[in-house]
Image 1 (cartoon, one colour):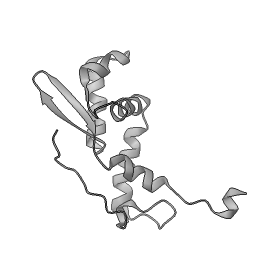
Image 2 (cartoon, one colour; image 1 turned 180 degrees about the horizontal axis):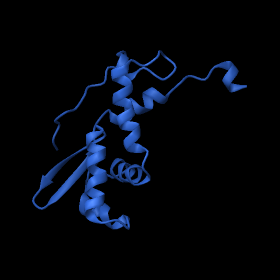
Image 3 (spheres, one colour; image 1 turned 45 degrees about the vertical axis):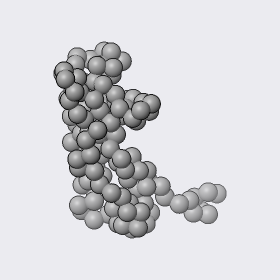
Image 4 (cartoon, one colour; image 1 turned 180 degrees about the vertical axis):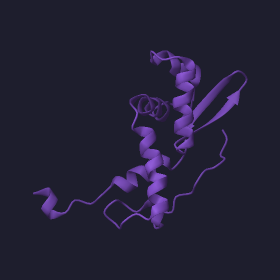
Length: 123
């Protein structure tokens, strides 16, 4: 499994502070927006879920395509969007391409969305 482009997440770093911690700077907002935009499509969200929930952590594109009433090139386009957003990566093995979720990608999104509840919000 290729480990190119992996980002180590430092929980104390500004990259992973939550929504309520501090206003986002322009660069971090652009990074997160790219990820959220990729997840804004139901097909891409399903693809990511299929990959992330797979025992062993990776899935062949040949196993994902039958789950959709879309052509293989359309599925490949959606997978490319997820790759460009930094959510997944892949490796070609013979004629097939295998995909996996990048370590830390989902953690970054979860950490950003994790806003502590205030007493006022819980009432």
